[in-house]
Image 1 (cartoon, chains in turn yellow, blue):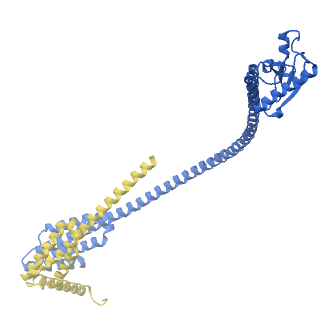
Image 2: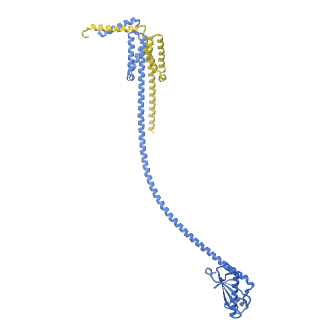
Image 3: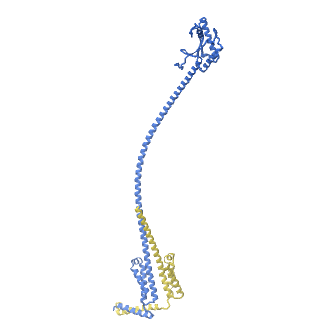
Length: 132
Length: 340
């Protein structure tokens, strides 16, 4: 590298960047994307994992969104609209996770509230006993 | 111009040229802006940064991909899609952080509650300890009071025992006295009954003898049977004499312990020896008559006095008549009361 001139280094960098950009652009412009089989499997698994009574109780809307998008992704697969299917499958994954975590947060908040209430009741009881 | 800016300029120019080749230019993207804004908010939230660093990093990565795609002129639908993914990952990070915070609150409140419970139990235990000590003290006091009461009770008991013994002794004495008194009473009763019996007997005797014209003399009670019993010079009892002799016999039967002396007298007519004999026969005739009426012979003795001890003068008919007589003399007995 010490032997090479600054000009040569610049030329190499430029060439590399251009090559990458061209490749990226070509991929973006490709008219027929591959089948998102793996992504579909991930989406199915995510919905299955999230579809519990705990989630449907505390995040029914969010879960419904994920389920609906999964159906749409399947439709897109059937219609061989693989690009759309991939997008939907990717969204289904995060939507399912979001629903699950939303429900978990709700449950945790509820538990925290109950614990705090119990502590307050205990404190009141202690105060009463102390007064007595 | 530095080489670095040169390279970047070249790259962006090339990219722009290529984007233009695809027929679209990078336009401002609302979804991406919103995702970035949400990510910035989450990143500045210390709770999210602390409690969900992994999720936040994933959201950041996702956002970077979206921005690169946008920057390199990716399709708006793809940019929207990637922005949506980034935004959802921010949501996930926020919910994760909220969940963990709530769990920490739960754990903290649980610990606080345990601490309060412990304090309460400690205080209760202290209180129970104090109550126990107090009750032990009270017990000790009660015990000593009880012991004092016990000794008092023992003292009282022995006093009562002593009193009981004294009472028993005095009762025994009383019983003895009562028995003695009863015995004395009985003796008195006995005496009284005896006196009454004797009085009755005496009264009876006197009444009976009064019927026979008995007289009280130094020799005892004397019943005089007049000469009407006998014809002159005879020792034969007349029929009239049976009434008087019957009364005498009855008297002897009622008073079985009595004995009597039957004494004959005459007047002075005739010889003294003849009169003595006559008086003897007359006394014997009375005795025979009384024995015939059931009086035991051993209770009767006879004595002849003749013309001795005249009851009246022999100078008159009436005097001589009074001298012809038989006297039944009842010797005085020990229990006869001669005060009357």
